[in-house]
Image (cartoon, rainbow, N blue to C red; front, side, top):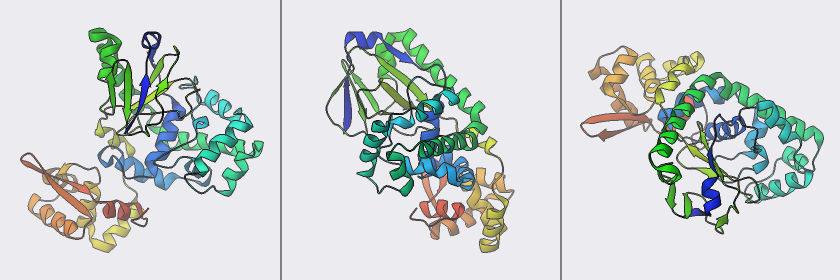
Length: 331
């Protein structure tokens, strides 16, 4: 399954690459990431911190941004890029009929909340609350990591520029991401609902690398809007080291439940894809002792282990993630 985009010669000549982060796309994608379990090695530690920092105003965006499926296009206005103030002002100026129509699409997939019903009426107070919640979410969950976001996006742009130098737009589109397949003149974005083939009518296509995008590229649903393709970058998982220490209250509760060392082993496994030796060094214990704790956690279905060549690596299970997050496993 995938969405097909047909590029004319004029479109190919107008393929562009965003030169700066798109802050509202990052805010929307970060909202998605707080609600799922994807990408534990890259986002696990950040997500646990983000969930603890979510406040009521930020949850307004979550009402509009399910982790799977449709999110309204008006949340990511075109042309504002790294200018948060301009982006939020564009959200505030969304016409009432567009709010109504896009929220109707969302309501067909998930029940509307009282405040999204109010938002669909074009209430200026509801629109203001939305913009405030979007700003709060960006400043609390994304902005503290802006240096890492910018550095990794810059690294991706360097790769794309090199692709253009080596083989032009054809190579750029061919090597963009595994979820994007370029078979001239059609670009197919796998993982999206198929729908009618899109034609860009000479408007070109803006490629936007996104830090909080995961596994598949995405784009605006309304084909009348400026064509934008948002795609995941290759992440350096070490960025999570800047997310700080784990919550001490959570650590204390886990220590009381399962003992200090075993709790530390569980927390160390949260970064994902870790070896027994890495966990042992992190918790300051011997490998045989850590191996025994991992066996117990595995039997309790809190940890999963798998062989990677000649190495055994460990990750949290969904139940283990839920335990660390302090929430029911089904959420």
